[in-house]
Image 1 (tube, rainbow, N blue to C red):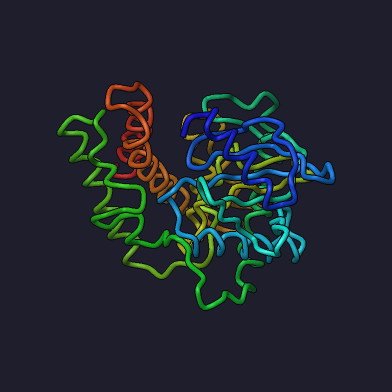
Image 2: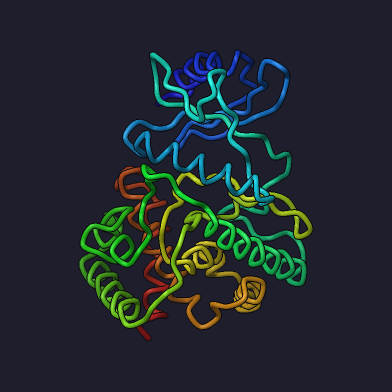
Length: 310
């Protein structure tokens, strides 16, 4: 939706929380996300959920999961109930809406931007991130999910099946025929590796990019559980590393992340490739075929696929 339209819908949605004001638009991608001030001046984040991306049951399940993590002391936003006690609002006009508590901390980084501090500090940060991911996984295992709990499945089929969750990455328009075959070969090799072993599975965030990790090594918080679901646990580590696939100290960073998590050292390249492949599919419907960013995602997937196959 257009930004002006999203702003009007956000102002209307706030009625379900007793009113308030919209401070600014933060992002308008899968969802339109706003910083808002509720009627009592409390800062919060309001999301307008893109129609068709998640079902009502999936949105409600995400909020139930986040509420559980927050109650158990995990550093993530907590859902704010509507005036009538619901986690999700259904405005008469516009998409579903939800509000979560505000976390006042900067993101640890962004795609395409190098870490500004030393390698030592970067590794310390990712060691802390590994610990944070391990805590999130452990606490997620204590959730007693309601009967209607519904989230995406980041399992072997969702990542390497004929219809991956984020689309057929081998059809990215920036790929030529040979490159498309290479990604299919990588998919087949990865799939065979996954099927040959048992893997730790459970609820995963599935989008632990730097933009969704806030704070410092001493106090990290995780936001944006919109894509989270049941899946292979090491996928969270692969996602955390995918933006650093060309970082000179990536080996040290990967070791720090896995040390903090308590494992995954040998398998991290596999799961980093899985995320790169998924992202290569994710970008297809979101950008025009000639957009240079299509090629950026494709080249990252190709580089990691070649490394894995070799």
